[in-house]
Amino acid sequence: MNQSRREAIKARMQAKLDKMDEPTRRAVIRATQARMMLINAARKAGYPLETPEQIERALNEIRKAVKD
Image (cartoon, rainbow, N blue to C red; front, side, top):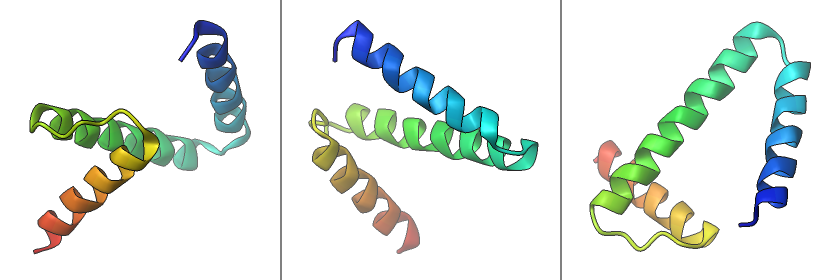
């Protein structure tokens, strides 16, 4: 992903966060942090996570394993 696209995504997300009330904003930030932790754990476990579809598949498998 190039730098300008990354900056545009960051600006859009910041605008969304600025519109939220404080409890909602904190919940979204915590959920995003948890998602990033799961993605990093999946990568360390050997999942080849390069596309959004691969990331979603790995996250779903992790969630399923946690429920069992």
